[in-house]
Amino acid sequence: MEYKSRYRPLKIRLLDGTVKTILIDDSLIVAQLMVYICTKFGIANYDEYSLVYDIDADDGNNNTKSTTLRRVIYKILIEILFFCLMFIGSITSTNG
Image 1 (tube, rainbow, N blue to C red):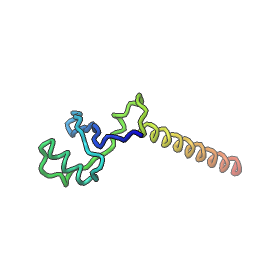
Image 2 (image 1 turned 45 degrees about the horizontal axis):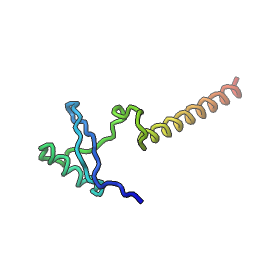
Image 3 (image 1 turned 90 degrees about the vertical axis):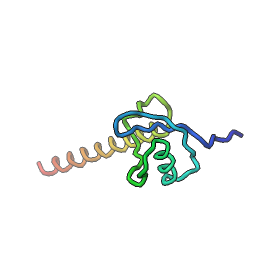
């Protein structure tokens, strides 16, 4: 049996566009992570910041859960689009 490490690297893109990597503790909740991250970067008002997943940073070359989630969302959107086109086609064929 192999245990996951408690600490993992997290890439953070700041407002000025720079990307920094820090080690975070996976056992912390997001509110505690924000205090830790803002302290590392010297930001005093951690209540005014939040974490947002950056889809542009995920290039799809790695096999992460986020890439799989993107593919699932893409498939769902394609199915919704297909359903809408079928529905519109059925309406136009019955009206005309």
